[in-house]
Each structure stands twice: as structure tokens, then as C-alpha cells.
Image 1: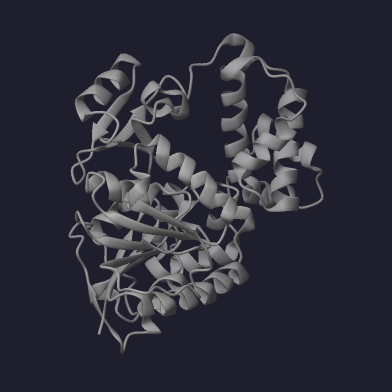
Image 2: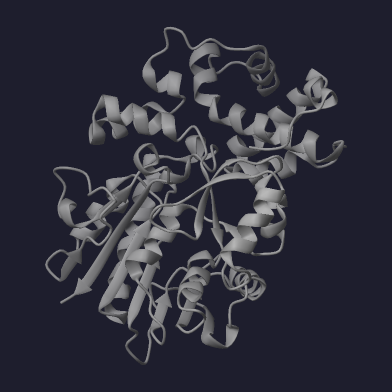
Length: 395
């Protein structure tokens, strides 16, 4: 989704495209960074003519990185990155490729998804993660909904108001990058996936409640808590990184959050202790981000079974401490892997009761512990990132 293309962009020299694409892929392969970081590094020192040219190259880079596994299947692993980029630009047929290659995922990831959902639905899920859906959350702390909608319409944005959350818009077309829309630049609208909003719906914050956000950065969920309670909740926002805490403070201020009601803490949430009992605990845990491939196709390359195991262990430690902090906990991860969802919760099944509060959400994977009482959101069903959500009542 981006600006219309001018002739100068369309006929950009192939060598410029090849250079940028090869650099982006190098950064992703060598440093396991996100597509955004890789693109920023790749463009350093290259003169680009305006927003159109940059956005065109960025979309090319996203698609190129997303197709990396397919290119490996077709061309093998002996090609240089420049040759891969050149071949991709000229067109690569996926005819006759096995499904994991055609969809451009690693074989282990494809096999895992198929084992969970079956071939037909599993391939629907994988295909849906190759396309991004943009959501915008209207920030009613900065402007009324009607004002934001009028501004978006004046800029030529086409949108659908969400059925579950009227302050949430699914963007169908935008003549410019989302970040450059006036309401976004003025913090009256915020890019935030519907699944992220759903997590706070499950939390159901109320005015006057004390809520602990155990992995708070960058602050999007905390800001939604304050928006829904009209700045009348109180939040203890914890993150292990002092730098991220400072960035979050700056963002929350711009979003119109009453910082006198938000206590920012740089600490390891697996070890943090509180003197009192909060009303609710939010643990949107660090994870493999396997559900966010549509947002960052570089995850197709960096995601490994070892990474999933690493985060599953980390999540179990965080949830164990969350159960010491409060009695009402919402646990969520942007992951489609059961090791980070159902299987983490099952470690504590004898100590908790679970509530499925989102009627429109799917349940957990069939055959796994507690699957009927947890919630999953999928891109092919709900047009969201892939998320796992559990509302936990500690006994």
C-alpha cells in the first residue's frame, strides 16, 4: 500500500534495484534484523528521489525477502545475492514446486503448520501471511472519531470500520504510506493490529484499576488501556530495556496519555516484585513473532525451531512470576506456535481457571491441553496477525 508510481520510479535502473535488494537480503541473512532495519541500512549512502522511489524500493524489498525460500528452491544456494535479486526481478516460475517452496516458507515451518491445521487450512494460513492487512486505531484522547475519519477521507483513504471495535479501521487503500497520513503524523490515529486491540478487550480495563504491564514497550497496549479508560486507569509499565522505557515515555506523551498515572519501570519482569496486589496483570510476552510474518517477511528467514524453544522457556518464567503478582492475568503472544501458547499455559493448568471471552475468536489447536478455553486469532480467518490469548484466573 503506497503512492502511485511515476514513470521515473517504474523505469528505475535495474542495477539500482539489484544493489538495494542484495543489500537488504545480506542484512537479513547476516544480522537477522527486521525488514525495516535491513532496508534502512541498505539505503544508506544511496540517493533516492523522493518518497515514491523509496516506497517503491521498500515494497520490492519486502516481496523479495518474502520470496527468498522460493528462490532457494528454484535457483539453489550457489547464486550470489545480486544474482538472486536479478533473477527475481526478471521473474521466477513456481510451477512444479512443492507447496512449501511455492508459498516460500522453510520446510519445518510449513510441516508444523500443516500438522496443526491440516493441509487445506494450513496453506490458507501461510498464503494469508504473505499479504499485509493494515489497521488504524483512532486515538480518541487526541481527536473525536468523526474528525479523524474526515481527515482520512480528504486524503483519499478508503477504509472499513471494524464490527467489533468501532474505533478501529481496516485500510483498504491509501494513496500514500500509512505513516505519512496527517492523522498518523499528529498521533490522532495509530497503526495497531486488531489482534493487539483484542488483547486489551480481553483484559477489559476499567477506570481506577491498577494494571501491571509486564512487557510494556513500545507502549501501544498501555496507550489503549488509557484511551479506553479515558486516562483513569493506573499502569505500572515494566520493560527490561531502559532505552525502550525512555522511548515509550516519549510516545505515550505524544499520544495524550496522562503520565502521572503511568509508572515506568526498567526491570526484568521475570523477577520483579510488588508491594501490593494489582487488579489485573497483562503479559504480552516476548515471542518468536511467528504470527507477524505479514508485517515482517524477514521472520521467514530468522525463525527457527530453536528460537521457538528459547522463547517458550522465557515465557514460562514470566508467566510463573505473573501468577505471583496478580490473580487476573491476560497472557498473549504474537505467535502461531503451540509451544508459546497452549503448552505454556498447560504448565500451570492445576493452578488456574481460564475464560474464553472473545466470542468471535477461534479456540486453541485441537487435541492440545485447555484448547477450548483459550483464544487464537488467524490472518486467514480474522484478517489479523496470528495471536494466542488466554485470560487466566489464579486459584
